[in-house]
Image 1: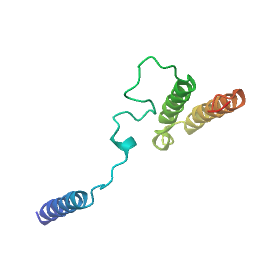
Image 2 (image 1 turned 135 degrees about the horizontal axis):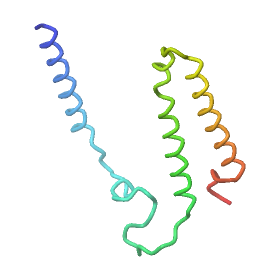
Image 3 (image 1 turned 180 degrees about the vertical axis):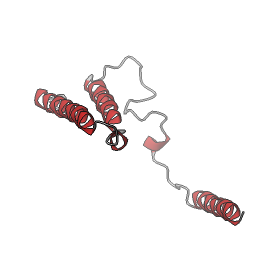
Image 4 (image 1 turned 45 degrees about the vertical axis):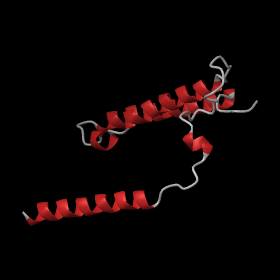
Length: 116
């Protein structure tokens, strides 16, 4: 019972402390960019028909692709305890090789360059 009470008291104390610090340390001079509801760099008051660079979407898709592939590697520490760790190592090596080759290909094609 002491463990539960001490855990509740500790979590309540830390929560209260963080809330008080948050209230005591507000940002006095907020930046106009921080007050903007958009974080993409577009002017929120301008026209909605402005052209934009397709490279932004290319990099976003590449990020999602590599993020998804990394998520496939996350269960690796538990998969090494299966009956056939050699199969796990083979599939993991194939995924890492595919990621590396994809990154090299995009790098050589200039897909990661923002300026031309």
